[in-house]
Amino acid sequence: MRKLLNIIYRLCEAEADGNIRDIRPRWYSKQKCLKSFLDAVEFAGNEVSQVIFLHDGDGQILLNEIPDKYEIRKTFVKSNLGSLNETFDIADEIGGSIYFVEDDYLHKPESILEIAKALPELKLVTGYDHSEKHTRRYHNEYSFDTIKRTSGIWETAEFACCTYAVDESIYKTIAPTIRKIGLWDIKLFETLARMGYSLWTPNPGLTTQVDSYMSPGVDWEEFNKNV
Image (cartoon, rainbow, N blue to C red; front, side, top):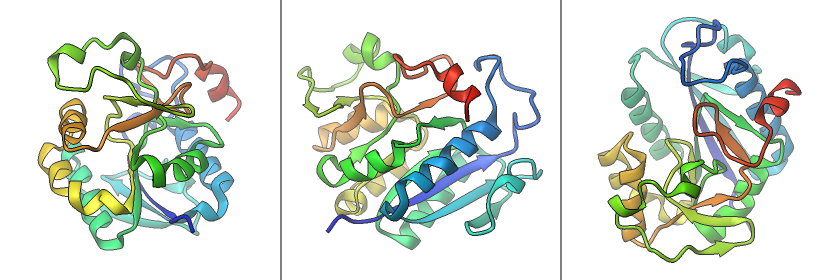
């Protein structure tokens, strides 16, 4: 019997008012990122056990878009690392397999379902097919295996930012490392790979962070338009 997925979605109101950073495409919308995530949760159905939103700081633009059926926790650390550490506290509290999600990702409808299905086998996965996985610009700077492995559409990779899922069977083992390294994703996944826990990403991507390194092979602007 497959274990159900617990999800912790970390969000703040920065950029929700339309004042977006220059790393974003002009069509970027935090509201649509949230809506695509909510659609993917509904599509995943019974594969998802619970969703907890951690809302950092002031404002209510995004907060008002979250359906009442979901749990919302508030924090006012107003810090990327600070709120990330609070998601780890929540993960320790609720247990199970955890999908950590940032608020600037678009999710295809099937993304969370596919992540949940792949997680028991692959243990550490993200839906984000970071574009630099294909250029491998950082490959020689870190100690990743030179042989890429595949399982269906999934391939070993080095990038996820802070949006990835961890299977319950390994979470307690790798949690101290995740906390220690924090926001430095490349260093984190290099370290975990050396511990025997490779990160797996799909090709093509099921999700993307909406910035200069979006998952290739998908028309995300068109997808965003239809969310």
